[in-house]
Length: 251
Length: 272
Image (cartoon, rainbow over the protein chains, first blue to last red):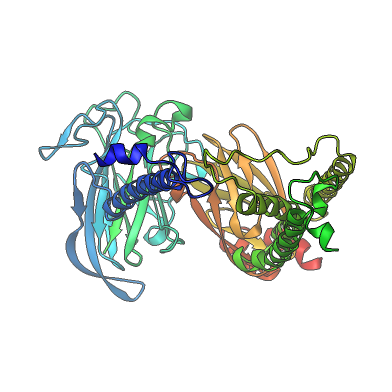
C-alpha cells in the first residue's frame, strides 16, 4: 500500500527530509492555520455584510407625519406636517388597537404609538403630545425650558409657555442632529406632569409645539427626565430602545 | 581578519555574542530599523493625528513624537534580534539533525547587564521627567481663566458659564484664553472629551473634576463621550467652537447675558 511504503521508506538525512517532523508536516500545519484563519475571516466578513444594511426597526413601526398643506414661516413657504404622540405611565396598553410596545416590559413608561417617526426635510412639523404620566424634579433644570421650537414656545393645555416648573416634569422630548449631519440641530420640549394622584387615570396634559425640520438624515430623540429605574433613574425604560428614546427620519 | 570573521567550524568562541557575525547582522538591522522608526516617528504623528486647537493637544503631539523617538532604538533592537534569530538561527526541526549546542549564556555578562540597566533607567527617567513636566504644566492654574461648568447626562452635554445665566449645548470658548473646566455628571460616569483640544477627563456623579487648557486656534471642534455610558453613548456629542473674545462676548449676550456681564466675562481674555 502506498501509505505503508511511505511509512517504511528510509528518511533522507539532513535538512528537507520527509520525516514526520520535517517540512511536509510543518507546511500542512501552516496550511491548516491559514485555512482556519480564512474561515474565521470569511465568517466575520459575512456577518459584517449582513449587518451593514441593518437599521433599527421600531417595535410599533414608523409613524409618517400627516401632511396638512403649506405654511409661511419667517417669510418662507414650507410644507406643514403633523405628528401625534403620547406618553404613558406604562407600556401595557394599546393605541388604535396597536400595542404601545409589543413584547416589551409592560411596567415601564413609554412614548406611543411608536418611537420612530418620519418627517419631510425643511418642513414645519407640528407635534401634538398627550401626556398621561406623573413626574417629579428633573435633574437638570436646563431641560425644563423649551428650546428650538418656533418662537421658543409650546402650548400646555392651550396656554403658551416658554418653560415649566422643574419640579413638575414628567418627560422631555429632546431631539438632536448627529455627527456628520446637522449636529447643531437641537430641540427640547419639557412635558408637565399630570396632577399627583391622576397618573394613569385617563387625565392628560396637552402639549403642542412646532419646529422646522433640518436637512435629510437620521436624528435621535430621547427623554431627559430620569423616569427609568436603577442608576439614578436612567436604567430600565431609559436604557432600552422603544420606550423613552427613538429616531426621527428626515426624508 | 578573515579568521576573526570566520572562526573554525565547531571551535569554541570566547568572544561576546555581539562581536560574532550574527551580532554584526543585528547591528545593521538595528540601525536600519532605528533610522526608519525615528523618521516615521517624527513625520507620521503630525500627519496622522488631527490638528489640535489647544495647548494641551500640542503637548500631547510633542509627547507622542518624543516618546516614539526614545522608544524606537529599544524596539528596533528587540525586532532586530528577533528577526536575525528567526531567519538565520532557526533550527529546521529535522529529527535527524539535533539542535546545536546553546551559545554563550548572557547571564553573568556584566557588560550587557550594565548597559541594559543604565540605558533602561535613563530612558525611564527621561520619560518620567518629561511626563511630569507636561502634566504639571497642564495642571497649573492660570490667572484670568474662564470657568466652564460641564455637565454630562445620558446622553447630552451642557455647558454653563459661572457669573452669567448662560447654559448651552454648544461649547463656545474664546481663543488664547486659559479655560478651567469643572466637570461632573448627573447619572453615570461619562468622559468629557473635546477631541480637537487634545485632552479629556472623566465626568463622575457627585464629583467635580477639573481640566485645564488654552484654545489657541479659531475653529470648530467636537465634544464626545469617552466612557461607555449606555444606550446612546455613541451618539453623545456636542458641537464646540473657538471664537474671538469679541465674538464670545456677543454670543454670551445672544444667550441672555447682559451687556455688562458679557463684557466682564469676556473682557479678561481680550485684555490678555
